[in-house]
Length: 253
Image (cartoon, rainbow, N blue to C red; front, side, top):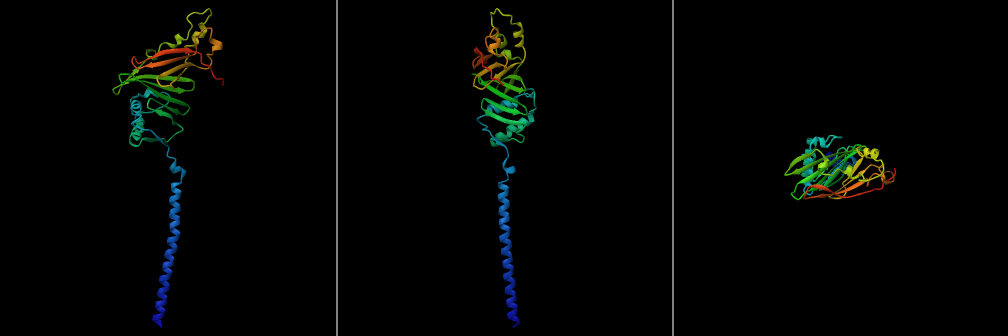
């Protein structure tokens, strides 16, 4: 009789233990699955701000950005060590991680140009390839209503800075003046000395230099031949040659 009771008791204990293990297993697995699903769907973990760039396709532009001196970034600081880190990440991964898009936000990056918004301004770089495989490089640092141009020549991974933009452009402020006029234009000509010009690099191998909004045809046609100048880049001479001077309509604010 005692043996029968012991057998029954042993069977009961084993059965309860198996049920307990099954219960633990059943309750633990859904929690583990839920934890994994939550991790994968966490928007904080998925918003890693990876900006894709084809390194080989854009290598010349990326190399030149490393060559630029610190004074090419006058309104903000993009130190060489930060540019090297950015460059190496693109070289390794074909992307870089934008940890602070509110400060440094890429608008576009192509083999011959790139543009970034920097806090309340913007910075662009534009490449013009010459027949000898050198590049004329123009950076434009834009803050508020002002433009700060820097012009370089890059050949065989060496950079030379142009101190005066007139060495590449004709004296466009003089070109805008009418050669013959019966009007007294002295005051209006003096206004051309103010930093009132913007630069449009949209089209490849072209630059449009245009005045700010107030040089309109209605007000200045008696003294000026236009308020915008189109230049074409000559890859043989490495100069920007005059294409035309014209009046560009200004949009009202």
